[in-house]
Length: 119
Image (cartoon, rainbow, N blue to C red):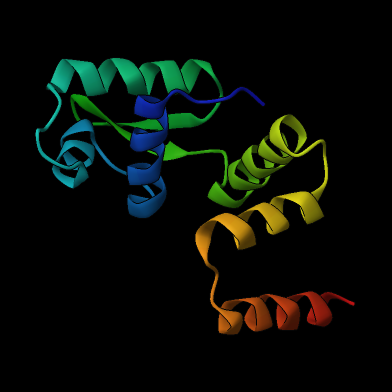
């Protein structure tokens, strides 16, 4: 699966939230300053060519929807992060975040409960 640029990811976040949308709907959800209609339309077409988005004809326009689930892309992105920055070790990643971000003990306990549920 291809990586998304920051702008592409921003559009995908909007589409994952909306589930299906026109370009105008996407723009309405984006933060200010709002990008131009043509800019968003171009990015959506790029996402379509990358296999992230498809559309249905709606009158004169298109209704776009994601065909890659947010969870699938998130999982792939996290795995790439772990591979590229932590030598494939989730333990190293968690250790890094604990040391650098003052993670609260209750957050660690919550993560441990989730891990224990999987076992």
